[in-house]
Length: 136
Image (cartoon, one colour):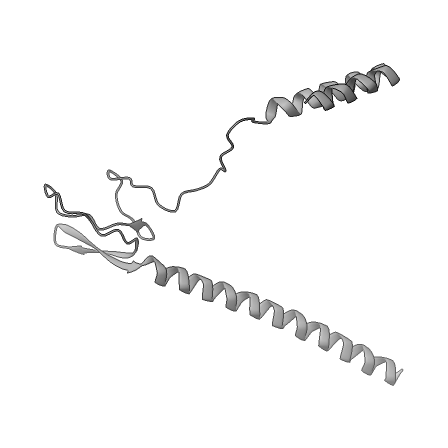
């Protein structure tokens, strides 16, 4: 900070207006900048919300029976669908890893298809241009 303060003082000495403008801008930046411990902002993969109703697509954990001290299943599951069973509802679950693998495969397939389409279009355009140039 002292180096920045020295440079601002030199700028003010050379050109008072420019020095004042620079100082105002630097002050605005410093007010927005956090100092001290820095933590990255992120979205957690899972947050436990025990009172929220489960919906299709939610990531869930299987809890032990109420009133027991047993540990629950630490694995994450994705709710595929919810089936009504009389008055109760039952969730069909799938391991998160399976869903993530399918998502990765779909993304890879879409990227490959786009790349192939672009390459094909470029090749076709070049071939067409060469053929057109030879015939004219």
